[in-house]
Length: 184
Image (cartoon, rainbow, N blue to C red; front, top):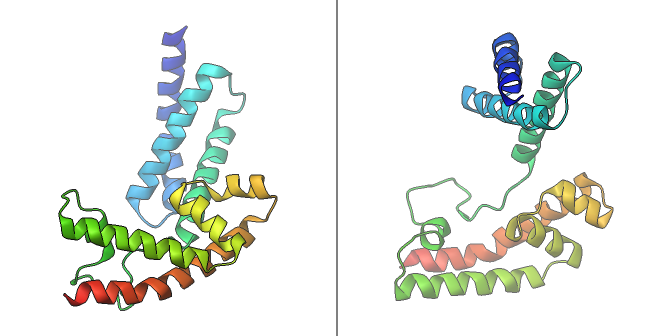
């Protein structure tokens, strides 16, 4: 039986692979994203094939691809908390990312990390509770917006907006710390 399912998957990939990749490429910005999405579609196909048969394989594949494209676009439109607070986009100087995400630990980096987290939580406490909670769930607990929407009963756009206001506030508040750290 597994041999039959493997053959079915291989035949499906041969039959739909090229057309599906073209479909995805027209809807995303680059080939790498298209290939990632196609890989996700094939993975989902292999998982579903083992659980239940698919009646209209082509329709199912294009629907899954469309959903994956929407998910990818949604993730890109969400404004992520950027630890690099330099608004001019100057990547030459040090930023929080290099300090916080470095593997080595020195007394200086440990101090800066603790100072950063302390200031982050002070700034979070200044936010309205709804904005604070969405930011914590999304960025620190890594909970997707759709899960937060289910928990709270709020519209996803409302949650995205709350997070955006939180991010803007945090950037403004942490910019001073960033400037103080990078002066040295």
